[in-house]
Length: 389
Image (cartoon, rainbow, N blue to C red; front, side, top):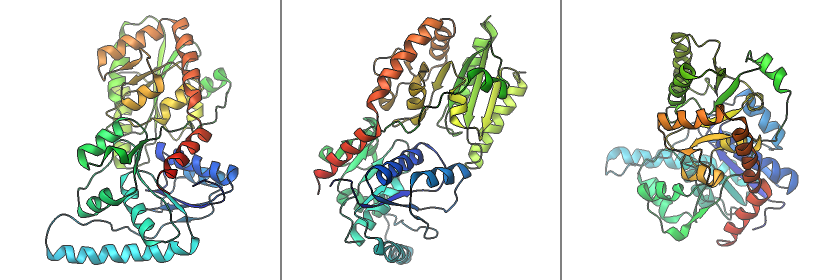
């Protein structure tokens, strides 16, 4: 299937602007404006949308955004009277979807993450115009191990993952033949916008002469902000050079995000680091990227992290957890590390103390990121689809 002049449905959980959402909306923009496709968006779990997300949707050329109420797609592996009720609840929800989506004659459904992938399969089976969909595995996600997942696992055309470890994650929980798994690395979603570094530092109250280390990620427990904070604390105690730390996430995603944000703010006060650490939310990513000298992403698990791709596009030397998707990006870089505080401190020290090393690694990252572009991504997706249509 060639992705030209097609009606396409993209499914997301809800309207916050994380990595998966950036990938989805960037793809929607390209398909609508470069490939003359009509793209609609279905928010599965909630019609909530942040302002930043709404702005991205408006820019992307998406025609319609749908939400069909609270979803029900669950059937545990048990024989019970309640499961008879659950069958009815599943049917009611799926039938509502079928009636709502059938008139638009979608030929392709593109889900992001596990739960939306299961729903995509049922849309594929219920609506005759839909020729293809897939299970989209993007790293850490929820597995329910119910009858629904069992049905979809066995019958969905294929599984697409954005990093080599996606197959292992899937295989551990929901075994599939390896022939049904396809690797499709993500693309760079951010347009590089160079801002006045000194002016932006002044706006953010960051000293002009400081070496700025930063991490951009969700405020979630699988992102190791505290590990970086502890490493920075030790470095600052021993370092004669002026260093500054910026942590950026979205505190408004949910209650857990707000709690992590507040805890980091509390730690800054406890250690009297108000003039050395900024814990921020609701800032533009490009504002922070333009003030960083060194970037970090330490985490429990990653697929193909957007934040690392963005660091690289800005030519920022990056110290990153050595997950398979990160290795795809940074190749043989010595700054791929285990989640170990002493090693993190060692690598940060090396970059902080050596401007030439920062420049060399930044230039290497600019070269490495060139292959991860959107046209190549779409070509690869078409090649995968051609095996099944």
